[in-house]
Amino acid sequence: MNKMRILLCIIVACFLSQPIHAQLNLPTKQIAGNTYYYYQVANKESLYGIAQKLGVTTDEILRYNPDASGKLEKKQLLFLPVTFSRGQMSPSNQVRSAFGNQQEEVVIVASGEKVKHTIEPGETIYTIAKRFNTTIEGLLTNNPSLAPSQYVAGQVIKVVKDSALPFHYEKRGIRFYNYKIQDGETFSSIAHRYGVATEDIQTANPDMKKAKKGKTIVVPKAYTERVLGDMKSISIEDLEANYASRIDNLYDQLVAAKRNSQVNIGIVLPFQLHKNPAPRQGYLYTDFYKGFLLALDSAGASATKHINVHVWDTEHNLNVTDSLLALPEMLDMNLLIAPSEPKQLERLNKFGGENNIDVVNCFTTKNNDYQENTNVIQVNSPTPQFTERVLDWFGKQFEGYHVIYLMDASSEGKEIFDNLRSHIDQMGMPTSSLTVSGDLSYDNLSRHMNPGSRYVFLPSSSSKDLLRKIVKAMKQAKQERFDCEFCLVGYPEYVTYLKDYQTDLQDIDTYVFSRFFNSKGFRTRDVETMYKNSFNGDMFSSVPNMVLIGFDLGMYVINTLGQGISIDNDAPLYRGVQTSFKFDRPNSRSGLINRAIDVIHFSTDHKITTLVQQ
Image (tube, rainbow, N blue to C red; front, top):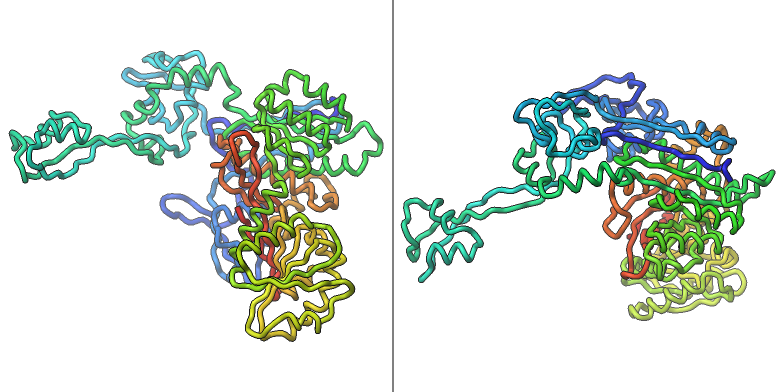
């Protein structure tokens, strides 16, 4: 099992990303005091083509040019800062090491300029932080021998200049309110009413010796508000006030508990490297791992925490899994990624619950541990929750439509259909049924449609055979029944039928709901290019694509845990290449469930649009 163990450390010292090594051969402009490269779009150029030409990813361009996701116009300008973040790891080296016999540690350091500074008379940890635009946390971490009270003249300290990012803090001040004195009121009663000191009111109104009915006075009231600022703009008073009560505890935490500055991720999967050749399952899990590495390579430098990735091969053996969970380093994990195999997944979920370690299940819906284990993170939404999101979308999307059920004997997808049908009945939508035994005829379909009406067709099963039976008649109706409006709603399984039926679904005008979808657009091509360049080959064919599962999960981890954000109800939506993430905890006893689902519209103009419902 040692031959599948690798430790990856992405260390982002003092929270700054590393400048790009190769400078872009582009002209520059000064905009709002900053320097930007700019590129003028040529005729018929695409975003993907420009990204390839410049040697950047489409996501990097969209980060600074969000409107570039649409059609690009000739002579349109695209801007990139002269310094911007890009990953510097070489995942191909990581994977080759992972599948060799050596354990390897790779350390990437991105930071500002490190200097030594001799503390001058009158300087404190707060004035030093402002002077060098560094963080209090950085000063404490880089000078562990000095407690906050020991920042006195003559001490030599290490400082990382310009390493502070914008942050939220409590800003304190005074606002002055006008108040008209009522009958019987005194300065004292007014002060009590507003929660201020009487002498403060008297000081603010020096020309009034006592309160007089009908007179207007000024009431000075202190306020505290949460604002976004930076180390340069915050006052010394506010900075000290925000840290004074907790700085000693903060020092203890940063110095004694370095774990707070890092994220430990354990990938515990049955790669089965002891088998030659490895089974298909081993290749699929390997592709997942490679996708995770690509995410670290693409965006890891933007993390504000150390990301340590440990990888173990369970060999598809429960005894090996148990021995791995007994390793001391397992207790240091913040997050474990578990396989789909029921017993192994059950073991990891139990271990996570007992040791307060989150366990990600991103491969199966056939596990209910999330119902009673707060540490389970369920990526593929279980059928009840998935159906609930679909029902919510269906009711809003097709309000005012007549629903026609296309009934057959198949039981595939029956649970979702039965829930949809029950919900439609509860909403009082008009419905009718059309039995499909053999191939559906156009005449039979057309008899159920009245001019001027709107229809949504809902198959009773997700079977490919039922889709085959109805396609021809529905395409003919779309061509000939222009006197009414209609569309088809399909199931998650339809995503696997696209090789044979994508054009048909577009001709009919179809909505498909799914837990995942890969549109195979420029973001997918970016990942494919990174994969080919890093691993000298093509991704293993699968639905869903395992490389993209690993890539999307890796990007989500970087955007949450890597940025110091907990994975919980408040974590923002992440729109992935294939899978999106927005988690919710249904109750205090349950784990987190991904509530983001894709609704894919295959429209008659042969466009594919993906809407993420959350």
